[in-house]
Each structure stands twice: as structure tokens, then as C-alpha cells.
Amino acid sequence: MSSHQVDMIIIGGGINGMAIAGEAARLGLHIVLIEQNDIASGTSSKSTQLIHGGLRYLQQYDFSLVRKALREREVLLKMAPHLIKPMEFIIPDVPSKTPRWLKRVGLFAYDYLSGYHSLPKAHILHLNNHFLKSDIHSGLVYSDAVTQDSRLVVEWALLAKQYGARILNYQAIQSLKETDTGWCVELEQASYEAPVIVNATGPWVSQSHQRYFSDFDIPKMRLVKGSHLVLKKELPDDKAYFLECEDGRIIFLTPYEPGYSLLGTTELTYEGGLDKLKMTETEISYLLECVNRYVQVPFSRADIAASFAGLRPLLDDQVHDAHHLSRDYRLLLQESKKGHTLLTVLGGKLTTHRRLALDALILLGKNRKNWPRIKEEPILLPGGEAFDEKPYGFVPEAVLKRYRGSYGTLCRAWLEGKRTLLDLGEHFGAGLYQAEVDYLLAQEWVLRAEDLLWRRTRLGLNLDEVAVEKLEKYINTVIPAFAGMTKTLL
Figure 1 (cartoon, one colour):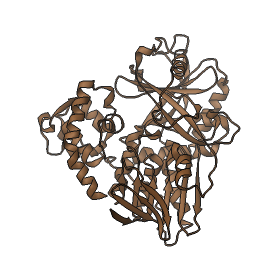
Figure 2: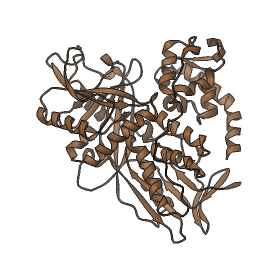
Figure 3: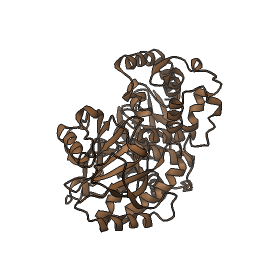
Figure 4: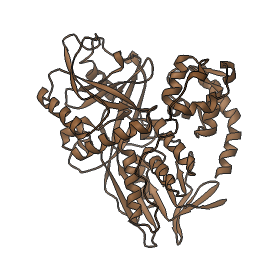
């Protein structure tokens, strides 16, 4: 077994762990990130896909979180312009528990807290799109942004790799112990030792803490389950909807993939197992009943193309309901008797992941000698450069649009030098060609068809069982070569 000395070990391949890896690697630190499953396979691929300040958090008077998230929204729009897109959200003007005047005040505060920003300010809109019920004549409109959450995680991983970090997925920890010289993590084929270890395991944070760091105390966490429905209907005018349910809770109906929309989320305290999390019939009924209060043509179970559920770990104040708990994060820095550092990431939300990463490195810098100077200035994520599509006119427009919106300039890796579709190799269906598959196997840590179809892309919505089996067979045929490359990296 080979052994490696690094500056920092990060456990957890979600958005927070990966952003810490990316920002730390930019500083010149030697980083290894270890994920027991696939990158972004937990909460970070099961969100509402929003990059937002959290308009509803104003109702909880969490102004500091809203301000922080809105500032980060503006930064992230510039860091990943191909992957994070502005979106207008319509709040239909209907009788609700929240008075109309209060909604307007809330939107004014939302715009004010964002400071200078590039998105349109909130305004009143007269509605006649035949999508909402005929007695809904107007609404309030405000701006936020949407993304592909799992691809955002992957692009942070690519950034970290670009600066020399080792990103290891599907790597189960055999043992984790503290020695006189640092934290030592043993994997099946290699071991790593570092003076700093970061527990960024998200919903598994309490479980992993108890297993590996039981000598240290952490606050009580509460797991909150959020479930979503992918619906086989496209929304008109590429706009999203902010909908208040009868119980006062908020759900979002947003554009998803072409021909699909996303509805969610439920927020329920969860106390079950962490594996194979599924949406319940009660949650399905709740979401459908809420959205059908607003739309002319009701959604039914026949419209459901897919569903997913994720867990968000929130700091438990033991007072509030799940949807009233703070979405802000806490970074807990602890030092062992041997002088080694443990940083535990508690809570957080998708929008504030970059700020969390910078705060984590600043906090570590106060504890470690000779720590490099933090780079606060944002950087383009891989794929974010200006993209000239002219050389790729042979690619069908729908496919090129997917490349542009998911990969940005990264797709040049498999398009460069190609002249016809035949040059892209075997077609697996739904615009998935062999050249893209080979790129994902070689560069984006794909080991299984599920990784490719649901986290690197969303093509699992459009491929039938025969096509999936064909893809799985291809991956299983060629993966030994890529697995050999992975072993070399270990």
C-alpha cells in the first residue's frame, strides 16, 4: 500500500467539501478529497437547483443569511455563466396567509439586500399565459438563478484537479486514526496523512463524527428531508413559480430539462436510515395538491417522470419546525491533544458554498502556521469561458444546446477536430455519443451508468431500458483502462 503526505484531507464529495478542495488547491495546498460513493451523490444532486438569496428566509428575519446568499448569487453568476442562469420567478396574486403588502415589502427588501446586482428588480406582472387559473390576473415577479447542482459540484472538482488536488470517489475508508504526525486515512489501495482533516459529509456528519472523531463534541443536528417531482410538462415562457401552500409553506415550480419541470420541495424532519431515501405517497399528494391550486390543467401522477429526495443537515435549535430552522452554516474548528486540526462543516446551502469554503480556509489560517494567503477574488469555473460554436455546426442544435448549458467550453475536449456526427462514435440515444461518454469516463470520475445519466447529465430522463443496458455494457467494457489510471493516481 502506497502512503502519501498531504496538507489536508477532506471527507465528503458534496458541494461544500468540493469547494473547500478547489479553493485550498488554488492556494497551493496539497489536497486529497475522499468520497465513499459518487461525487454529489447525496444532497448535492437532490436540491431545488436554485442559486438564490432565500426570499422566504426574510419571514424568519434571517437578514444576514439572505444578504450573504444574494452577494454570492452575483459572484456565482460570473464564475459559471454557462451553468448558472438568471431566472424570473412569478408569485401569483392569490389570497394567502401572507398579505399582498407584506410580499411587496419583502421583495423590496430582497432587492435592497442584494446591493448592486445585474438581475432585474421585482415588479408587478399582468398574467395571461393560460397556464395559471383564469382568475389569477396578476403576480409579483422577482429574479434569482437556477443551476444543475451536481454539475456545479463536478466543476469544482475539475478546478481542484486542475490545481493538483486528488479527487477520489467510490473510496471506502478502511480506517481513520490520529498518529503523532497527523490524521491517517487508509483506503483499500493507499493511505494519506495530513495535519488537517475536514469532515464535510453533510447528512452523514453526525454519523461520521461519532465513528471517527468521538473524542470531540459537536452540536446536535436535525435532518430535514426535501423531496421533488420531475414533471413531464414544460413551463411557458421559461419562467419559474413561487407558490404558497395552504399551510403557509413555499414550494417552487421551475423549468428543468426540455419538456420537463421540477416541483419541490417538501421539508420534513427525518429520523430514518440515510441510504435509499425515497419520496412518500404523502409527499407526492402534498406537492400535487399545492401546485394544482394554481394551474388551469391539473398535474396528475401520470405526469410524474421521476422523483428524488435528499437530506439537509441543519443546526437543531430544538424549538422550530423543520422549515423554520436556519439554513446558514457553522464551521467548528477543534484541535487534538497532539496538535492536529479537525474542521467540521455543519449546515449550509448550495448558494453559499463558495463563501463557506473561503471562511473555512480563513479559520484554518488562524490556527495553522505558514498558512498561504487566502484568495478571495473569484475565478471562472472550468467551462465558463466564451464559447464559439461555429466549428460545431454538424452537431444537432438540441444536443449542442445541452453541451453549452451543461459543459460550456469543456465540450471542446471531445468536439475538437471532429467534422461529422460519425466522428463522435456510437450513439446511445437522446443525443449521447461515445465521444462524450469517453470524456466523462476519463475526466469526470464516472464509473457507472448512473453517475453519467443522473449526475453528470440528466439523460436518464430520456433513455429507455435498452439504451441504458447498452451504455452499461459499454462502460463495463472500457472502464478497466480508466480504472487502471485511477489506481495509478492513488
